[in-house]
Image (cartoon, rainbow, N blue to C red):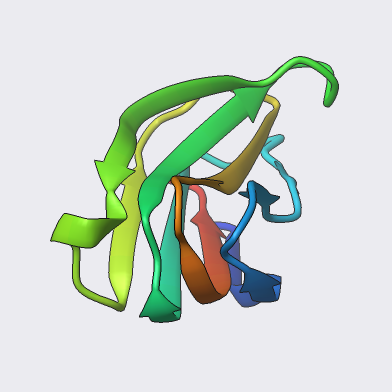
Length: 111
């Protein structure tokens, strides 16, 4: 039996890191894992998060979350394993004085 895999897709392209950013949400039916690769330029300040939702309206941060971008190196990869969420999306919460450009790719797979 073959496993489902969604090859890397762009979920955010050249977002302005001076404000809050949300990547496109991925629907997770029959998928177990999602990974996000954050690639940025400039001098960003803030946190990288992954958010989940059951209805596409109410979003909650999940672990790993709140990763300080000033202590990370671009590219940065966040892996979310065995989630039961219906929808998942990456986000960036800018801090004061943040600048730069952020692009994010996602890949999903069935275990």
